[in-house]
Length: 240
Image (cartoon, rainbow, N blue to C red; front, side, top):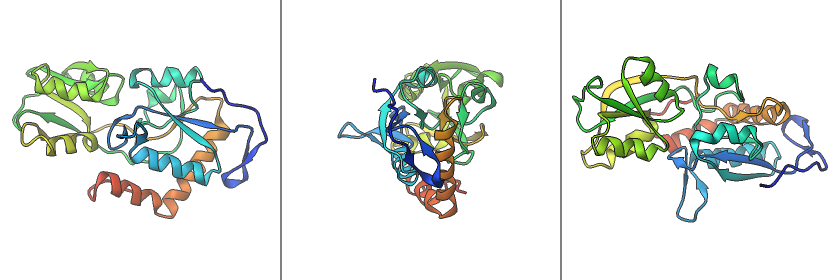
C-alpha cells in the first residue's frame, strides 16, 4: 500500500500547509447513492463527486480506495488510507476512536424495508449491516437483530425470509423499494439516528481534517453542497 511521502508542502485551502503529496480516501463502494463501483470499475456516487470537489478546493491530490465496511475504521488506524468518506454517521462511540469533520449530510431518516406494509418488527429478526448505527438501534430497542457484512445481504435476508425487515438509511432503501415492483415496501415507521454523516480521520491528522472541514464549510456557504445532495438524493432530501 502506497505510503504518504514527506515532500514540498502543498499550500491548500485557507493557506494551511501540509507535508503530504497524496491523501488517500477510503470508501466502501457498496452503498448507493453514497458510494458504489460503476461499470468502469471506478468509485462513483455522491461521495465521489463530493470528495473530488473537496480535494480541488483544498488543493490536495487525492486517490480513492475501497475497503469492506466491517474493517473500515481499523484499516484507517493502521494507515491503509487517510480518510473515511463512506456514509459514516457521527456518533459518540465512534468519536472515541476517530476524529470527524463537521457533518456534510444532515441527520437523515432510517427506514424499514419489508415484504408487506403490516410487517411486525417484533415477530422475527430485523436485519442491519454490521457495525452500523442501525444495528445498534435495533439491539437497544427490544428487537432481535441479525447482522450482515454488506447492505445487499440485509435486503436479501428479507427476500428469503431470514428477517422480517431491514433497517438502513432511507436514502439507500427507497430506490430498492421503487425498483422491486411491489415485492418490497417501506414501512411508515421511521427512525432518527445519529448526528449526520462526516469524514473520519486518525486523531493525529488534525491538519488534514481541518483543511477538509474548511472546504466543507465553503461548499455549504456557496450552495454547492446542497445542489449535490439534491442531485443524488432527490428533492425531498434534507439540506443545509
